[in-house]
Length: 135
Image (cartoon, rainbow, N blue to C red; front, side, top):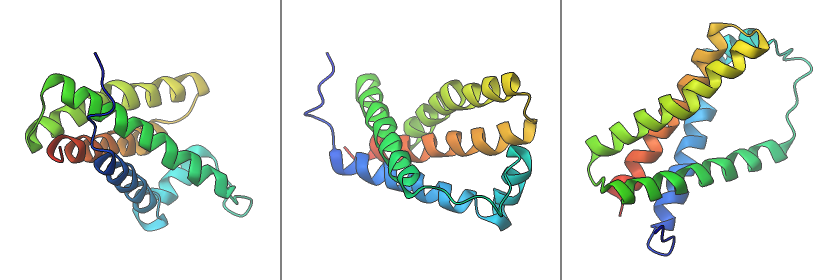
């Protein structure tokens, strides 16, 4: 049975914030931001994201980190290597695959899959390592 009371909530919060920070860097214009703008068809002059988007993103990452912590505990993962494998498996299977499906149905480019899916995979790896080793 899943027990949420045994989870390390500080580790989950830190994992979510770490993913959020990775995304902030990932989408910087000099890193992959310009590539994302082009692939997503975003007009930077008209883009002004609602601050609520950032709160929602952090909440979503918190939920992801919580689920990763439950999975890590359930499979007995406790090392950096096991966290890395868990993050790669969940990142590729859940985020990368979904990014590809969405882009395929929307007629979007492979670049969009690589940018968005790549961040999701990286984020899962970061979060899984944190929640796995910080028990």
